Each structure stands twice: as C-alpha cells, then as structure tokens.
Image 1: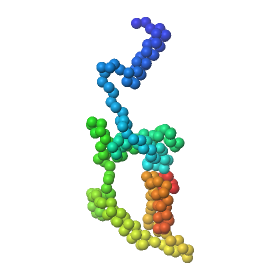
Image 2: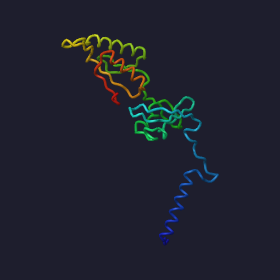
Image 3: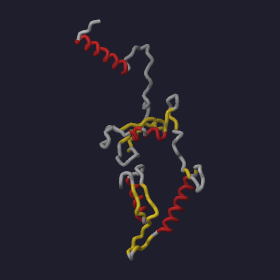
Image 4: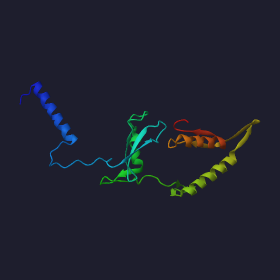
Length: 196
C-alpha cells in the first residue's frame, strides 16, 4: 500500500479519534458496560495531608463511613491538586482493596501501642490507658531525677534528659499546647519536621 503524507495523517487522525471515542465509552450497545467509578455514591470531605508540614489539600471520598478514595484538591492553594508519593498513598495507610475491589482495613496498620520489655525480643500489645500511664510515669521519673534549677548561680529550670519530637499529624492548636507542655516541663531539646 502506497501512502502519501496526506493519507498517512488522515489515517493517523482517524485511528486516534476511534481510540479516544472507544476509551471514553462510545462503544456498541452489545459491549459490556464499563465499571462504575470508585467514587460513585460517596460524600466528599476536604482535609489537609498529615504527612509533613506543607499542608497540601486532600479530598477524601467516603461511603458508609469508609474512605474509598483520596486525591489532591485542585482548589487548594498549596498543592493545586498535586500530591507527593506519601500523599498519594494516603488512602493505603488505612485501607487496601481485596480481590473483588472492595475496601478492607489494612492488616499492616498498627491500631494499638506496642511495647518491648527490657531484655525481651518480641513486641507485645498494650491498651492505650496502660501506655499513657507508663509514659507519664517514665516522664515524671526522668524529669525529677535530672531537673536542674540553677546553674552557675543562674536560675535555669530545665532538663537535658528528655527530648520532644513533634508531629505533622497535629494541628496548630495541638502544637501550641505541646509547646506549652515542653516549656512548662523545662525541656530544651525539641524538634519538629516543620521546625515549629
């Protein structure tokens, strides 16, 4: 078959148009219908990504109390709809899809605190109340043992034995309260991924 340049461009254009129309769903009536959108019959909730301090906007699609999809918010001024690899995987922190395409809780997600006792090789689950009690007890013991009231005749009221690492999962109000706790406890070593 001898094709001229003009015939080749016509053929390429017709092929591209046919492929586009087929992909959009303009098929014969006898063809099987395409699968419904994953976000069909969902409610949109707008939130902020919790992985770092940038504050990208995320749209969560929720059906029957289960997040079925997350995507970047195109109207958000920080990310304008784009997300980094961590933000894109936001959905998979809590849920994964089974073989039938239904969301189910991610089996690798930790839902309880873990503790490894001194000398033990395995981690064991504990209840949240017990974990908070252990943390508070260790915090008070360490602060009482290492608290310095004065240094070279100057009142310093500090402890160098406790470090505080903030989290971008917290909002501004929570970070404000954490800073109050840090300062009130005399902690001078603290950091945060967004350098608050």
